[in-house]
Image (cartoon, rainbow, N blue to C red; front, side, top):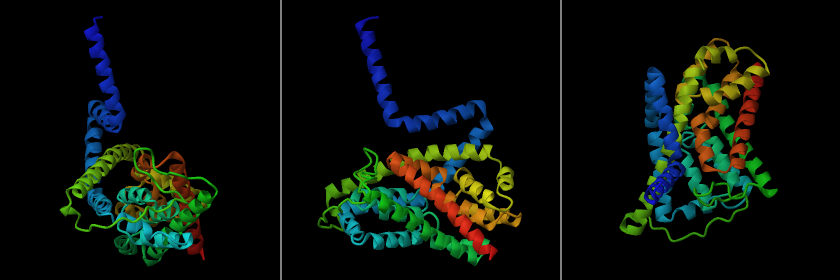
Length: 350
């Protein structure tokens, strides 16, 4: 083999290696779709439509959250936001859980805000409280839940959001004081704050950042970077979710969640992760299952676990934070959802 051929081969391998390193998530998603279209055309068409529809559904929430995070960074207001989370850890956790329960962001749309808060140096305990509470309930979800499942269920789900956030916040606070959970963000995502991190020094805020070319460039740079980051991971997540739903028939889910006792609540907690669609689509499903005899506690566990740890949300979290933080997030979400379902079942039995 000539020197020229060796050089070309070496450069080709280097280019492919860099492409795989930087764009492997896009490549994996494209490979899955290609295989589906080759070997199972109808499923490929259905999956592509499912991905496109779900990306379109979360796009408004993602756009809003990305814009807020980019605006805070471009203006310098992120320092002021971070300062709002200083003070007593107990107060911070309670406030963060309450704000999370009232915010309109879905489990995917909250990811850019989480990354921004951690990069600002906001303690992970407060961020985790907001993170866990936000996807479970928001004002519009409250009224829709009331209409589908009743006022009592809606109030209980609201309390569940607050309780899950508080549980996660205090768990992280205790672990942080024990010396764990430092630098939660993955390398290359940002410099996160841990339980004892100091909030970044407040810099002068330029609210009309568009008058400064440097700040405008930062706004677009951060916004585009975050959007592309989320788009590639959510595309893969929705691909996998579509395949799981195709191979996890609804009647099987209904049969698994029937009956009384601890087993249906535990199964609902675990099944909620792959079978959960979104907060609005899941409500009629749970309403129908409860009409067929599913225990109220199992319905609550399904909705809470699915909202917090659904496959798209879990994959986005995996891409954002280090493994130990991801494991803690998933553990709190699942154990908390099971406990909430059990408590609601006991309440309805009184």
